Length: 96
Image 1 (cartoon, rainbow, N blue to C red):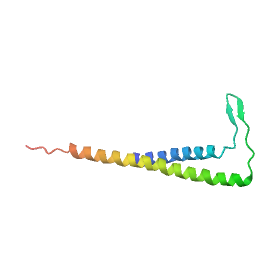
Image 2: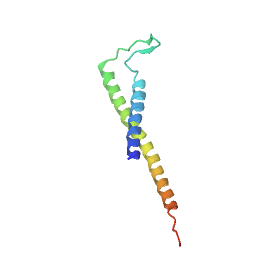
Image 3: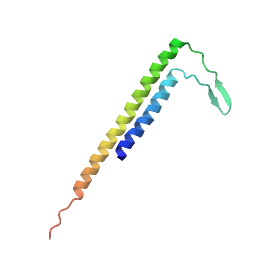
């Protein structure tokens, strides 16, 4: 159950990273504010470029989620196999 939970959390984190990376590539619509000062004003984009950005952001979100969940799944499987081997080695026959 812990491995499954880790895969879900890894997918969610990968989804957030993919979404944010794709959003930054499209130029992001929000204003950047550092310590109360606006660094850049929001850009005015047309509807055509905005729909293209939605597709890119969606693809980045899904790709990030799959990569994040896949990476954690590989680590989880390797961990569970190692635990299985350790348990097998711990089973010792006791002779009287």
